[in-house]
Image 1 (cartoon, rainbow, N blue to C red):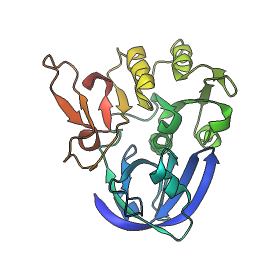
Image 2 (image 1 turned 90 degrees about the horizontal axis):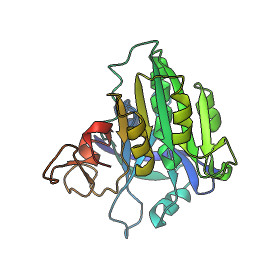
Image 3 (image 1 turned 30 degrees about the vertical axis):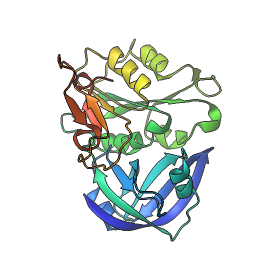
Image 4 (image 1 turned 180 degrees about the horizontal axis):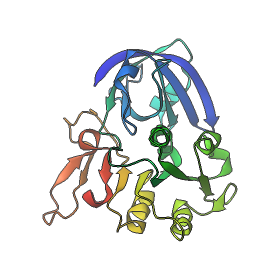
Length: 260
């Protein structure tokens, strides 16, 4: 993990409240594991805590990386108003990321994303494809209006969509997509990122599969495991007191390891 003032190359609005920010800097040399995140300082004196945002794409040749975020409060709203040439104080890459070492060329995996949990799955899918692994994407959105990055995922392989209101893809959620796919497909692994409700569904549907990896969404403070602000409980703990730090030991966990 390093810290650097990274320069904004491009700011692009993808959908209402959804923005993609491309950054350049030496920090890109440290990136490479899909599923990691950056801890970004809001360039205002009245904001003390950094914002954890997952890495969407890494381009080492251009020394650029991108993040996709949704404006939720004043901090991310400030990010959305920044333009090319401005700089951001960035720490990273942080977190453990997805381990792909156990997979072999020719295997098939499911990549599942919901809402703002979709962005890190793009770099993951890219790297899976580079290993010769067949990827099926299952992406869920609230509506067509807020659906983003569809073409990019389609370019990487089979991509199936669901929206809450049925305005794009099937009406329902990724759980509905997965239940249909499970009739004909048995994945070697399942990778998922999204809200806890979606992750619970994924864990339940694939409870017999030992290779189900979930990226947990938690509010963070330090981002380095020092403050214990982002803990989640460990599975099979009778005392109910054992926990893990999402920022440091995660954000990726096997589904059987944690309680959602």
